[in-house]
Image 1 (cartoon, rainbow, N blue to C red):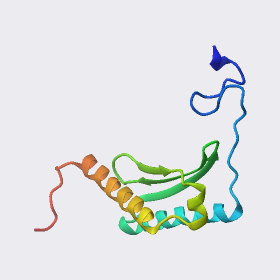
Image 2: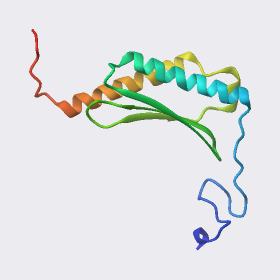
Image 3: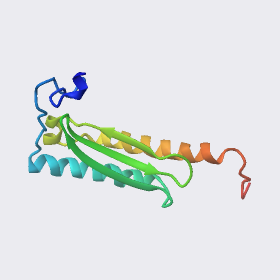
Length: 127
């Protein structure tokens, strides 16, 4: 019955009877996060051919900002990586190694989706 009350809150997210407190980002934090996500998108695109679509989304909720970068390969299922950066990381900027790791992982996962979708039935065009 707790779920039927307006003050119940989601289990594990907001305690019953307490309002959700959204985390507000400063202008500098928001710009830093946008730059970091744009860099991940750009780097992921550089690893893949033009037939792959790469995009991102920023959202803000009770757990803080969340960034998602997604790749839609020409065949197979889309892949995505989401992360919730620490507010201190936003002040100093996300590490380049972390951004590189996300971009490489997404590109590799998207390529694997194409390989799984196509299978072994492709005849090589050259030897």
